[in-house]
Length: 171
Image (tube, rainbow, N blue to C red; front, side, top):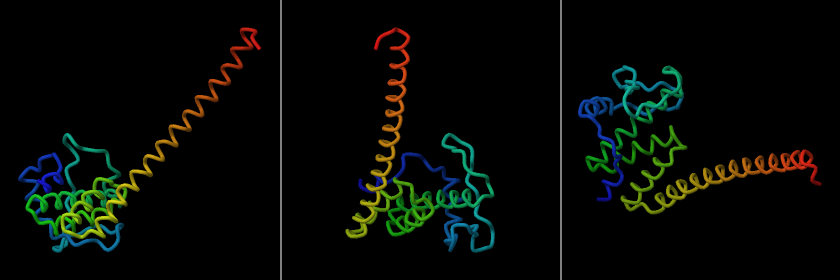
């Protein structure tokens, strides 16, 4: 039951799972800017950009797009390994994906949960704290933006009061 809560709600088609399984041996790039290459020398296959969950991404050849594709592939592989009850393999893939997408809060939570399931409390504690700190930063930013908009609205209201009082002749 605990493992099921880690799985995403979307379904991975068997053909996609087979394609990802063939690319599972891709070595981890030493630098994010390097283009990932399979052991046989072929370039990493790009995921399909169409479908219901398609999101606009940077230009196809850009380093950002390449690291995004690699991170997406690592997350998919991690999900598949988790479904196969390979916690070590899933943790490996999710942890590598966090290097490419450190801002992804869901990924931080998945890593923390896996560490917790593997009885690694110190590492799990650190990841849970990183997850919550990331949420706090987002909350603080959202509050700051809301406060700035409110301050702008207050200033505009005060200006309008002055203008309207002059028009109506009230002091």
